[in-house]
Image (cartoon, rainbow, N blue to C red):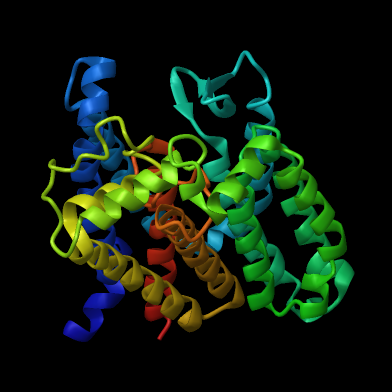
Length: 374
């Protein structure tokens, strides 16, 4: 009887090595969003709990989404790959229309439809992963051919990148590019083909970074933020102050100082810095441990999947979480240039949380399906 239980148990409950870390990170996120945003929340909304309450609501919605995606047989995504891809591209195009978009911080990244505001670029990451998994798996017999294994997938990434750079959102392009090339590498695309765009990419990156003033300042600031700590280096120096002042055990939840209008975006892009300040090195290590459990489990699921589509999809979803964790924490620690990326499951933001939980639900289904086939 016990041997048959895993075959009938719902993926949402059977894949505990994903479920528990995700739940813990999300709950930590709600607490830290409250701690990091209480001062801002009081100033902007006259309510200490404004952002925490919204994050708790986002979490409830996301948990339902994760349950649904865990329930949906992942193989069926192959039938909807093109529909999901075209819908995602359509939403990115819709963001370009002033009547539909919502501006924040000088960027047009949010779409307002029916009173709901969301960020299409977050769903574009999932759409690309689903399509890449389907297409690369289908073309396995000819994956070593440039026109079949590499070019069509690089073209799809190029379309996404072109639409997202207009917003502008260079950080998301970096994430999607790393996921795309990582999935092609795992699928067996030749290294020479993967490196072939470099002569074209280098001048494009040069133009996008060194010819755009605010991006160039980010690079120069990254090299030595202490040269101008009160202007261009303000974000990173205050982030380092927050993490450095936390010590081993931290100052305690709610007792951090950098969130008091010193560190910009303390509840979104730089929430990791507040974690370092208030929970200390031990808190940071606990966070990294939970992420590591998720990533190791994702790699295991990808390796044990019973078909190439499952392997590539699981690998892409694992990269999706891992790349964002590395970039967000790397920025907070001053080892990467500043990028506006959220920390999965923890940073404030409904679209990011829903997309991340949806990804984990799909990963759960792949893992459970592989076990049931044995």
